[in-house]
Image (tube, rainbow, N blue to C red; front, top):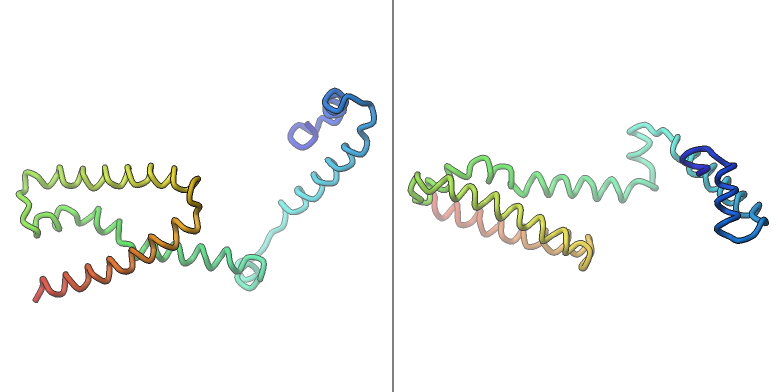
Length: 151
């Protein structure tokens, strides 16, 4: 009530009812102090250079950059964009290519749904590190096979 609606009177009534006592000044003090700290932190404005050199944000920035690079290098956008040409090159008849494209989209959606449930059970770190390792190995193999196919 205090933080969201700035209604200390209602917060006092609610706290008295919740605690079952009229002695709620300590609780109100804690709430005010926490609210003061959180609103103070919300207004911290940093420049890009401050974020880049700050040790507080270093790991977050590094992880964000690595994940963005991994997403870009995973080539999923290229696979989706060029899938028709890829399927045609593999010898799939042109009347079946739209169904193969739908299959790619379906696999993408199912993988996302499975990942949502796995995040809760396994954790984000495991779901980032191991699939990324597998992705590197598979892309290395794919590159080798493409080179062999071209020759």
